[in-house]
Image 1 (cartoon, protein in one colour):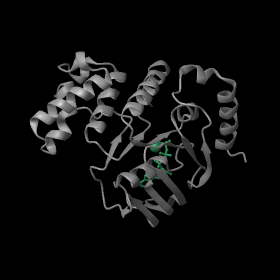
Image 2 (cartoon, helix red, strand yellow):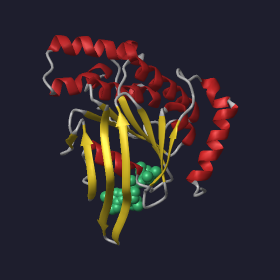
Image 3 (cartoon, helix red, strand yellow):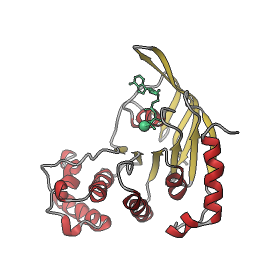
Image 4 (cartoon, helix red, strand yellow):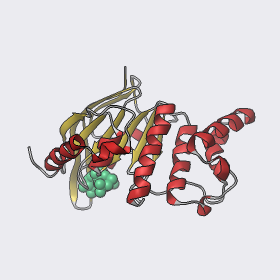
Length: 252
Ligand SMILES: Nc1ncnc2c1ncn2[C@@H]1O[C@H](COP(=O)(O)OP(=O)(O)OP(=O)(O)O)[C@@H](O)[C@H]1O
Ligand SMILES: [Mg+2]
């Protein structure tokens, strides 16, 4: 069952410098529960595609169906995590996580229960009364992920969520995300320009060509789950990385 069906989708921006074709006839189907990464060099249209899926940006041609229906703007069936923190600095960790549920007027007892479960899942139980500024970047990222999960969306959309973290924290967060995802299956569409990150996390990689973004190659990852840090050191990982790097840099 496909959650998302994108056909021949194009996006042309009308800028001051004239027209910019950001996406050119993209086809993409995503199955429920799948972890898909969108990869490509800077400016190839990754964020534009994610933003279109989020319903924040219009497309200029083609079609997009979410659960069989056309997308008309943002909705609670999708949640987005960006590179920059989206935590509210004036709210405690727990209140940050409850925020969306409060807006949706979820009954208080249910808010308590769900927030409790999420705090546990995220490893933030001991920090429920802390404020974002008291936490590290990696922990603030967990709050972002928790907030996205609290909305119980069909699709989690992530745009370079770990882009601002140092390498070590970034790899820890990749493992954390996989752990959370395996415990609470969601469809994830993850944008990154980091090939290794995409390879480590995904079931499938969608490689876009440099501007205008076209579908260059779709790669099914052959690696078993659960993924463990040893995979990053393995020969097959290294070889696939080199192959994809060549493709990303314009090779055939
Ligand atoms: N609002 C806009 N108006 C005009 N052009 C835009 C707009 N947003 C994006 N573009 C152009 O569309 C192209 C794709 O941009 P996009 O941000 O989607 O790329 P990206 O793959 O996410 O890049 P990066 O890896 O640097 O984040 C770029 O050429 C960009 O300049
Ligand atoms: Mg981007």
